[in-house]
Length: 333
Ligand code: GLV
Figure (cartoon, rainbow, N blue to C red):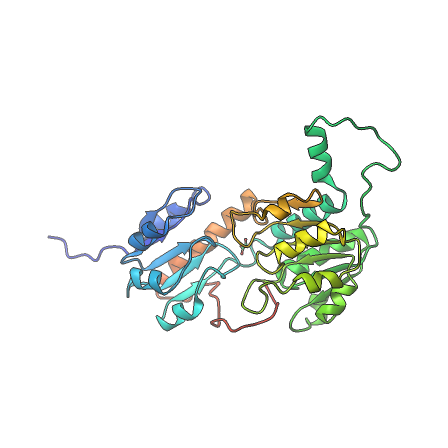
């Protein structure tokens, strides 16, 4: 009878980019939910039992009961996302379980998407497409479907982490002066000429605002009805992080004509999208596509696996999330 130790078990809760799993499978017993849909909770709890690592997505709630179902072998929760709001990090810390995410590799793709949404919202692309596809009669006219011009317009960024900085870099090509709000002012080399403002001043001075602040206890609904009302009438708001902008308040501000247009990439209760937003012609709505490019999803998968392999080898996961959370206003990702 063989006395060799079995390889550590790793649960992967979603289908990943091609080739990513093979690297894991060379070192571990991989339990794979090979699907584009989230793992039902009961299956997640059962499959986690005895695992040394969980490779999770934002749809998996990682809480005390899941950690306990996994048991004492668990060393790492490797989230396939830059965000970690699906993870009870205090519960992980209490059990000595490390947490990692996938920062950096998704920055450029996500900033590109912020700009795609900004352009689509300001130039009314969603509306225009719907009009053509509905077969509505139309004619070019000097007053037909006029949008807002971005060139030279001040841009506000709420959350000047890596993604916010990448959004700001792209603004140079449009000649847009950039202001931002973060909990802490950035060093000058990271500001790249952007000016720090208190939150309410940023809102009041931003005809165009991109929200990239991460979701945490301090940022949930930070941009609520009162704060949207501080933005100039006719402003455009792009939300790249679920839960930071109050979606009902956003829909109401569009409905009232206070905002010219808005765009949302991540939703607070995915896959549900509020009916009030769906009803707004001036809302450009994307099904959480920020990091959805072939190159970036490959890099995110590879980085999540790098973290798992490092933890299983007894080392430090390269993008471990530290320290455990406190209620903190916007800073990264
Ligand atoms: C969002 O999609 C993330 O990666 O946190």
